[in-house]
Image (cartoon, rainbow, N blue to C red; front, side):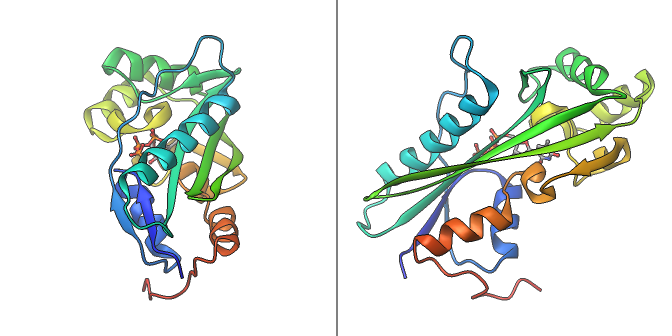
Length: 196
Ligand SMILES: Cc1cn([C@H]2C[C@H](O)[C@@H](COP(=O)(O)OP(=O)(O)OP(=O)(O)O)O2)c(=O)[nH]c1=O
């Protein structure tokens, strides 16, 4: 079985991949996450996932290894809401998401010496109305700081989520159903290590 590397610094992605019992080594890669001019969100998120996987592959010496990369972005009216740059940015994002439905796009890329495959998973998330004092308190919790769209569905941000349609694990950062299928194609087995 080829060795698997996860090209991500994200603790969420590490936990999600661990959940399905895949043995892997985590690598952190750093790429420029600035959207290109007028780049559509689905194109952007797939490009970043591919760049992360390929940057990871470039660091691995094992010729038969596979490298997984992923990227998550929140999309509102075709606008990319990435990680907040500061408090004002986070409060503006939370206000924009308040009382509305948005999309969460996560792309997962798997790269090896024989090529790179990318898959996009889009989920829909609905928020209840968020009061300004709640957004302030949520920012003060620290949770929104490193999250696309300034919230975490798996954390305190869950109190804002009135409905989800699609892949919960993709919203958190890695679509497990699609990831497992891609790993299978590359000959990487899951369910080999107990997660419980
Ligand atoms: C919407 C949402 C995003 N997020 C997180 C997932 C991602 O970690 C982050 C989006 O940033 P990404 O750039 O996708 O990932 P990252 O920088 O954290 O990690 P790396 O590039 O090294 O793989 O937002 C949540 O944890 N919960 C959520 O509900």
